[in-house]
Amino acid sequence: MIHYRNNGIGLKLIRKKTTKEDSEERRIYWQITYQRRSVLYYTGSSFTADEWDDILNKNLRKHKLVKEGYQNFFDYTLRPIIDDLAEHNNFSFDEFESKLSGKGNHKISVNEAFQQKLELLEREFRVSSSGVYKATIKALMRYKHFKQLRNRDEKNAFIALCKEKRHVTIGKEVLDIQHTIHFEEITPGFLEECEKFWFETEIAPSTMGIYMRTLRAIVNNSRGVQPYIDAEKYPFGVSRGKYAIPEGGRREIALSIEQIWKIEDYQTENITLATARDIFVFMFYCNGLNFGDLCRLRYENIDVSNDEIVFQRKKTLRKTAKPTFIYVPILPPMIEIINRQGNKEHDGYIFPFLNGIEPTDSNERKIFNAMRLSLDQINT
Image (cartoon, rainbow, N blue to C red; front, side, top):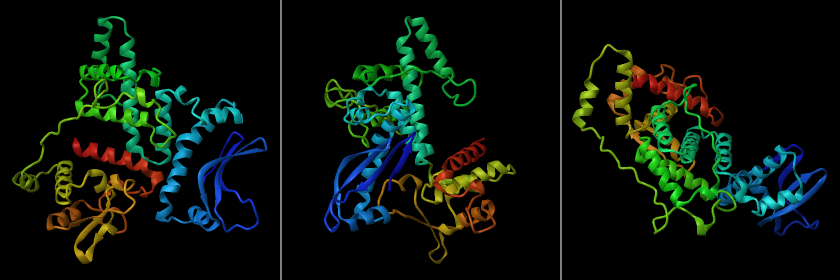
């Protein structure tokens, strides 16, 4: 299930037999191999031969949590330790066990924890999620830089620069600030002052909330062995002396049905504007479908016998063990829009935005970039 090698260090999960008779439960171990020496580390679980075969070779729901537990421990604990020791050519079983026991846990920086998370998201092809983590660590490093400035004039100049570059995300004009942040620095006071700085640079409260919740997720290290900050020093919370994450207010932006009809009836010779109109109306009639899910719709999602579109939201695919399908009746305006804007061949995507890109996890970055480009064109 898990086999990994890096610079001569090997790792795999094994079920160890102690006798020829193999009908009883046996312990499951992580086997670490280096320079012909192997050391076993007990996982805490035991299985019979048949159960272990099912775990390795079948996708049974009853073993889902067990398999996720092994994978998470590998992704968040074992692999980062092995990669770090391999990179510095510094592997020994004593050093490995020291890091595994948590003695070196707090030596990791906030930047390194974010980098490990980003690498995991890349391996899982979760491209859109990685953007939030990248934006958060950049925002934190800007505050760290601001915090180290000596006088108010320097601080004001840096705030003005942050405001000027706030929407620059690509190219040479991007504000690239690099600072190392340590978990010992993440205190309620640090977070409160960081929030004030972000406010001065005109970051919206809702965005601040996203950044702080992302940082909290990193601190919690829920898929690792333990949080990066001990319970007595944990900075987040609503009690006195803790930092409460701001909640962004929701804007009421819903349109009335009369306004929707006006948009639907709008006539224009501008092809791009007509496309924007049709896509907006289709998403409205499709239960508020977002643009990403619209791009992923395929003709196979159309249930002709029931006149319905049946699909799953991309956002919920990873979060629920049981598939959750959305059923949307196909209305006449939707058929007209498909006829105008859809692909003429009925063996792929309904709309042409992702043509030529197979809907696989490994193509997630291509899909993300294609959707962003298409949306930019529609929004112009």
